[in-house]
Image (cartoon, rainbow, N blue to C red; front, side):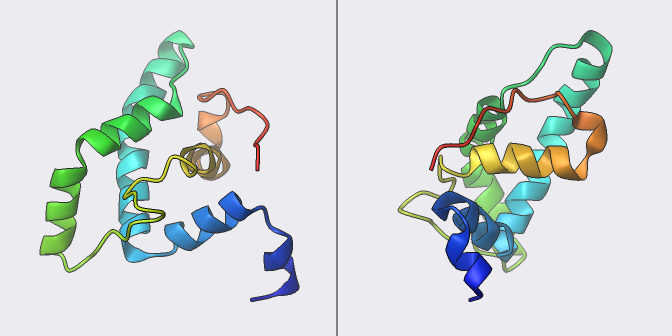
Length: 114
């Protein structure tokens, strides 16, 4: 752990740690795929998407996602008792916008609370 890690907000560190696990990376890939559908609509109509919608869609499919992951030898670790911790979705949205510049404006990004 570096000194910079100590200065990171707790939820940002939680997201960073989660997104570097095999399970977190896999779920993040699925989140990107789900979001891509909404991004096409956004580009055509300007209608934004809620990251909560994407997150709850993942949560709805978590049983199937975990089964596919397990078949590949990947486990999704629970954080604070949840497979998809609610503290992470805002960071997922920011990650997507950072890595897919064409998705700028897709989500309404508010100031993060820690």
